[in-house]
Amino acid sequence: MKKTIKVLTLCAMLFALCDSVKAQQSRKVYRIGYLSAVSPSAESSRLDAFRQALRDLGYVDGKNIVIESRFADGKLDRFSEFAAELVRLKVDVIVTGGSPGTHAAQQATRTIPLVMTLVGDPVPQFVASLAKPGGNTTGLTQISPQLSGKRLELLKETFPKISRVALFVDAEVSTQQRTSEVLQETRLAAAGLGVKVVSVEVRAPNPDLDGAFRTATGERVDSIIIQPGPVFIVHRKRFLELAAKNRLPAMYGDREWTEAGGVMSYGVDYLDLHHRAAIYVEKILKGAKPADLPVEQPTKFELVINLKAAKQIGVTIPPNVLARADKVIR
Image (cartoon, rainbow, N blue to C red):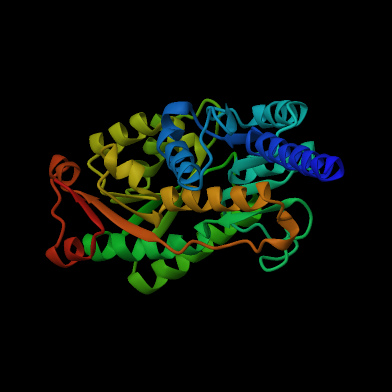
């Protein structure tokens, strides 16, 4: 009888120990690094989407995860400092926004998992291939150069009379190869549309936007396309003011521009990308290796039109284009 009691007591202690271990594991707080090229206000909608997606997966900021956010505010030279700081904090995973942030994070660590977002073409700069990334980096691309031609096609369809378009490029983040790809895609589309493309570079940290617009208008452009880049996001308000002042119909890279007062935008759904980035983070926190997680390309694209902004500069959006829009701001 005494032996039976001892065995039962031992079993109870073992079960209690297992429960204690499980409780400790469930109470583990993961630290997630988050590197952004822009300001907290400019990044807010994307970070909110990332947080919400994590919450849907059972990870709540301040409870079982802590998100360590760092914002370069357009000063891309700060990425190295921020990446090194996140490594010292021993975060479990780092989410990076754009190529400069991803590069800085890779320079800072080859062991902490990295989930990249907003990267144009990560092969071979950041990963060995999309299917088999290798190393400590995986995530999502935004295939930005390939969208340049499509943006011009939509702009020409909306405003058939345009003949000269200024392509604004963020020189700070665009390598010579990527700039060449963007120009090539845009000019290829332009050749078939009877449109001339004028490239206008804008350079951080103190961009001369007024001078850039003088360059564009000096070339007698009648429309503009903005290639996504941190310098434009940081100075979005001024850029939109100058576009409106010069009464130039403009095509932007994402809906944040049209929601802020731009005429139209076409591009990747950034909120969806950040939602999907949270899924990568969850897999990694559960033990998956970045090397084994294929890099994914965007699946959602959206055309957004701001009728108020169009009216402000005296242009009309054709009904057939409006019918194709995913969102119309009236």
